[in-house]
Structures are given as structure tokens and as C-alpha cells.
Image 1 (cartoon, rainbow, N blue to C red):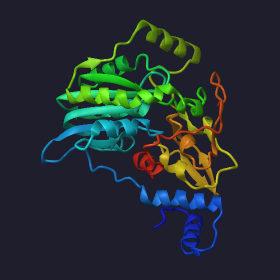
Image 2 (image 1 turned 90 degrees about the vertical axis):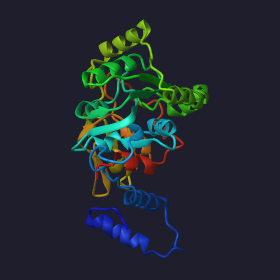
Image 3 (image 1 turned 45 degrees about the vertical axis):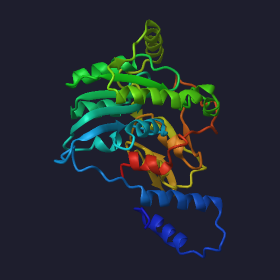
Length: 327
């Protein structure tokens, strides 16, 4: 089965799948088959609407948002064998967003020191019922006011966070960080230990919210003052103003399925970005050809290393397609 919508793509898939298996295939076509194959097997099944089960209540329900796999990996570790994972990119379309579990958690990256807009929007439009609430933010350089922001966000939407903590991981924001250097940073050796500590605290249902220091506030204030970004939705913009596909694009379509807003399409064999953008850079990091680049937007610089891309080694492209695809 080939997941495709255009006649051109159907023709390509038909010919590739029926070709002589002993005939050599060049790298360009191999990647195209890989991309289309992923799209055929990774179409997500949207939940039918909230937790309407009448059987035993879910023990631990975790909502996650992930662009490069860090938050998905952490979610899996915290969920364990008994937990249930739901992608925020899919659940935000739920027409009956009422969730009931013994424990409810949120795991997401820290964008400009706060949760991504899609996470904020999901929380604002949903109803949650649980005995224990927790949030874990994954970040690269600084998390600053993240715990305080999340605590207030929960209160504004009718529930109380019991536990909020953060885990430092590889920083994937390409305008500022060389991911190759980030991957080699010794701090990464502490990730398993930090995840284990967070998991132990949640298992014990500890009440703890990571303190925000005056230095945290100074870093945050300085950033927003110099960047001029919106303090609640700092990364939301139009995708065509942020990213573009270079001539290396082969139209495999992976970008169309890892984007949580569905803001990529393939036109005449070339990917084109147009639509809402979370600035998560899932498209940039997960392109098999490294064919998507970032448009420098002042005051942010150009990428320090255009060849450096990242996906958590424990998460596949197929996992992220299943989590984020809007097709």
C-alpha cells in the first residue's frame, strides 16, 4: 500500500514496487521509496473522543508534544508499562476533550522558557480530572520561568499541578546551537539519572515545583526585551517565513507528516511550506536529505552548522510521523 494523493505519486509507487528486485536503485529513489513507505504505515489513528471508557480508570495518562523525539522518549520512560501516551498534536482535534485518570501528566519541550503554543492551546480547551497532576519540560540551555508559567496555566484552567520539573537534554534550536557539539556534551551522560529521579518522584506522588530564581527571571526578561517576541506565544509564526526546501529536496513527503500543523505540501516533486508554524523544526531535523533550511530572522543568526541535525536515538521518524501527522 502506498500512502499518496497525487497521480504522479501513485505512478511512482506503482513502478517502484513492481520493479526487478535485482535491479540497482540509486540513493535518490531509495530515499523517495523510504519516505513514501513511512507515510503508508504511519498514519495516526485519531482517538474517538476523550477517555470515555467505562472499564477500569487509566492509571497514568501522559500527553506529550515532540518534534525531535526528546519529549517522546522521556514520556515513554515515565509512562512505563502501565501508562498511556497520547500525542497533543492529535488530541488537539478531539471534539470531546474530557480526560479522566488517576494521574495526568504533560511532557513537552521548553520554547523560549515556556510551553509551546500548541500545548497551551490543548490545555486551555480540555477538561482534566485526576488525583495527581505533573509536568516535565525538556530543555537545552535554560528553562527559567517554565515551572511558574505551567503552574499558572494549570490554575487558569481549573486544576492544580502537584509536580513540575525539567530535564536538560540536547538543545535542538538550530539558529543558536551546533547540534553536533550538543550531542557530544558531557551533560548528556546525566540524562538517564535525571529521568530516573523524576520518575521516582512521580511514582511517589511527590509535591514539588521547581523553584524559579531571580537569575532565571533576569535571563528570561533580557531575552524577551531584546527579541521583542510575544511572551505567551513567542514561536508562533508562518512557516514560509521560517523554513524552505533547498534543491536537495526529492519530494519524499516526510516533512508533510512530521509537521504538527500540516504546513508542508509536495508540489511537482518539491516540498513547499505554507501555513501556521510552531517553530519546532521537526521538518528541518527529520528530513532524510537534510534539504530543509532555516531562513535567518533577525535578531536570530544563521545556523552555525547547516549539516547538523538531530533526532533522539531512541525515537524513529515513524514514531514522529505517528505523533504529528495531520494527513
